[in-house]
Amino acid sequence: MKNWSRLMIAGVVLAASGAANAQVSSTVTATSDYDYRGITQTGLDPALQVSLDYAFGESGFAIGAWGSNVDFGPGTDSDLELDLYLSYTKELENGFNWNIGYVQYTYPSSDDKIEYGEYSFGLGFNNFSAKLWWSPDFLNTGDSAMYTEVNYSQPLPAEFALNFHVGRSSGPYWGPEDYTDWSVGVSKTWSHFDFALRYVDGSDLKSANDLPGDYNTSDSKVIFSVSTSFPWGE
Image (cartoon, rainbow, N blue to C red; front, side, top):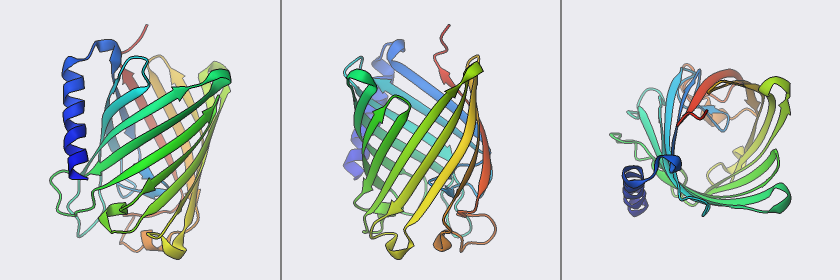
């Protein structure tokens, strides 16, 4: 997986340095909690997240990098997550699309040794999407894991939307503790900013709740976020 990381880092750097502005985009998000499939990655504390993406014209290929602060609690030294990814999306007629991708999760300057890779395949139709994620070595444990998710967004007047999500984590890594997470929320676009408020819950994942305080908890939560993407359009 290390070779994947080096190649993707090089690709992101080269793309960012030599791309036309129309093909480079970045999103900055401030959120009250970094939620990953129903599990907090910041001990229910706020997170600042930034992405840099490069799309290869209309080919459907894209590469990018995404970063966020993290806090996994006592006994760990990870404080930054940096994800490197590549994807291909094919738009079909009548609102259908499909996509494939790969993500390498890294934690720079950390000795936790939890870096891993994950493949994905997704289908979309208008405001509906479904995606399957698979990691052959989840969290660098030697066990594979799978995540299946379904999402739906219902547009509302005045640039509001209702958003629904349900996901299922399964596979050898989780063993008998397969669990489900879900969320429902509302979002609003105003000028160059997107605001979102959502309620996140799911089945109780005991192994994720065995740390002191709120670290790694899968308990229910309400998350508020605001984001903006560059370059700003008219």
